[in-house]
Length: 397
Image (cartoon, rainbow, N blue to C red; front, side, top):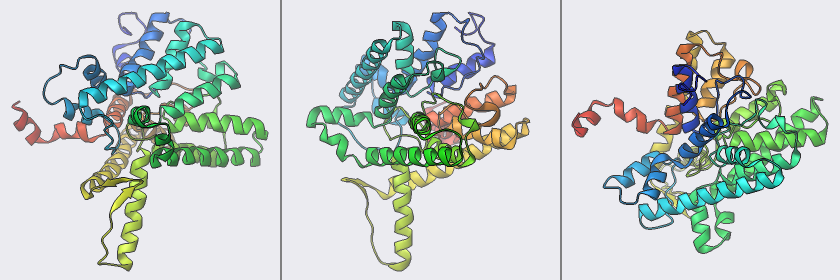
């Protein structure tokens, strides 16, 4: 559609499509105002299709899918979560899709009650629930200058950052399930800590008064931690400490099993527990430690996978940044784009910050960005496996 409508070149159309389907929200379109509603709807729809997962939606709508369905769904799911609210994968996929659809409908209704037209509300609902970030305005959410709209979006961005399996479980067992989930509680604490630290930085550095600082810190913390990437202010002009906190929550991301990107909070919890266990083993070499988070137990194999994923994430981010610096990007610009696209967040810092697009990237860097977004969405291991020769021998190619 981008090419046939004359909106973008083939390479830029590829970047925009990959950005949409991976839920990154990084755009190469400098001016959205002349675009027809059909193209704006298509952009938002790519978010919605890729947010929950194309395979999950396919299994939900076409339950007659054959063998291998479970492996495909697990390969596309995010985070080291073992939650399975329903016994059969087809029932689980349908339940997740129902939650996804209901959240989208609720977000659309809320935005229409706020004052948006149907198509504009639907576009933003698609982007919000899928934690993507495409907007219909060049200024993004800053265009509306509305505190009430920001509160609506914050609510839906936060609930979309939780494990969607939790909502299915909560429907069966009660809302107390949400309050008992350790990962979601840690995520909320991380967002709250980010809001307080950024607010303090903005106030102490004299950038803006307390009420405005708190409002901007709250929206941007919810937006970037959920990897939605909506922008209500030019945070690239904020103090260095505030931008450092934003970078940390971009990398950490949301919860496993959500539509959010990043490392995932559960992995960070397991990394911390693993580090703590290593320290204890130095004190008690013969001790045996069991890795548990809340009531959920994690095997040694899962912990090793988390450690491997953390290494791969950092190694690939460094590789992408190095490749873009080789292509001519400045050090901080390349680093920001690499971490932002690997986390499927969108806005970075510097020349590709809150008020900028990715249109100025050189062609080679655009190809790198596409790879980074794909590896980030499929969590690296799925894509890396195709580079192993035994994969092709086993598949018969």
